[in-house]
Image (tube, rainbow, N blue to C red; front, side, top):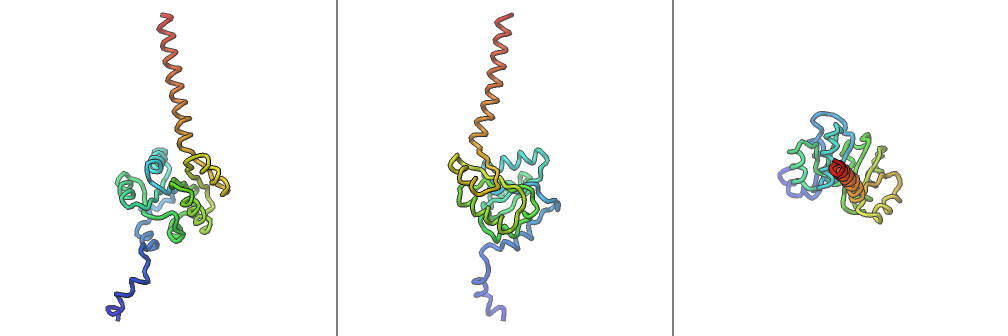
Length: 179
């Protein structure tokens, strides 16, 4: 009977079997992640690897399988998945994860992720990357989120670094002038 029904069974199967794939991709070390990062593009992957260097267990999630494979080759615990899909969030070990960070590129994606986390009773902290002040203002209305403004933070860090270089340069010039 299966052989006769098999061609039509595909109509009832999900295109991406989140639950089955989640079982296949359980953590090899069995350790709960300290942070889950959604979006492993340039910023998300750099953030993930920087946190790993500080002995923070990171779980990375991205919808691009090539990005996931590349990050896995670099040693990151990474999974394929769509942070906007509530049924995918259900498969993730996120309920007890202390931090979830979204580096997803647009407000709609971030809103969908926040809604999915709320539906599944995530009680940890949430940080979201905002592209600009307008994006940050919109995200602040969602409540309990930490806003990350990468361009502002990078400029502030660069200014501190540059100020230190300028001060060192001036100190060196003053020493040379007084000698």
